[in-house]
Image (tube, rainbow, N blue to C red; front, side, top):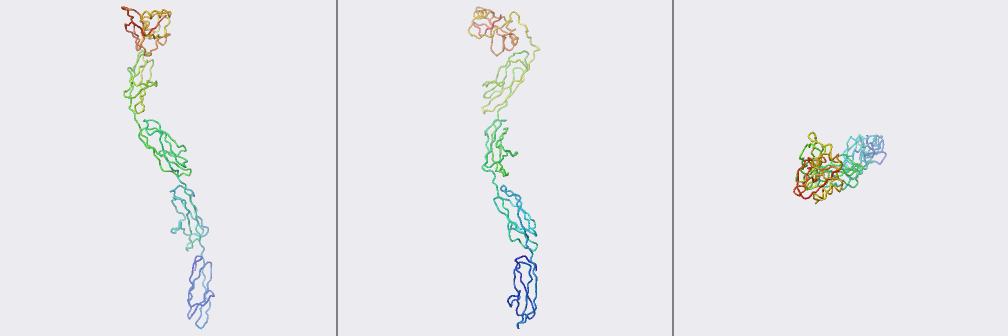
Length: 405
């Protein structure tokens, strides 16, 4: 007696001695049933008639109509999403006892989750406890935003020396941000990595909505260089201006000692004047470089420094004019208003090269001074750059001349 609107209902009449029936004042019929479609609360009637035409009293029955749920709505947790994103659909209707989403089975829960892979319109209907359904379905449309496309990742160099910085550059159509090697998202499409081993680097792109692309990769091969050592012919000197030899591990293509130029040989001469750290950088055939250093100290406890050079007041700069004989040298100094120095004066100049005007600055040049003649040969006293000691040499000519006055 209670049905949904539009539901067909069968009315059944019964009376003793009846030959025909009339439903709701309609035509007489021998059938004792009739079907009506109920759209509202209604009281239906029936009368019976005998074969002689005698009619019975009227019988009635009332059928009540239950309304379907009203005001159905369907909302999506997001109306624009990335492909593959789960979206929650929520339905609501007054008087609803169950819901059906997208034509599926009825369920008491008023929500469902869908995974969106393309633009789509989803639907929902509601049903009352009696089973009365809403006549129309509610709908919600969800649009899918594409992830950035065509992502690439390039390295500024595909082979790099160990410890070298390499710039990674990512590019993708529609990208708003990038993540390198699984790190934080950033708007810059480049990043710098320091290569310490063979590695494959990665990058992903993200749209403004947060849709992520596939992953791009770039491989960088690491080149290694042999380690080197730097040794000194002495780790401590007792006098300033002592000449030391720095020697690096051999095998490199070129060397730079103390940041000055490049050379193919693996040693360098240094005039040591203070406790210092000396360095060398080796450049290898694969264009990689390695460095090393050594500390050389200075202790003057065993060094006799001549603080006063007697017998002269000035020293000329070194005069390098090869081929001068003894007479030329002596005459030249006289021409300059001076004379050739003695051996002791030479040593004094050497020891006090930083304080004597015009004194020797030890630059690995061999200086000769003429001081006597032996068998018509000029006798030269060589003052060694490393320790200011001297020893005799005999020659027709002098290479370097110094004069005092």
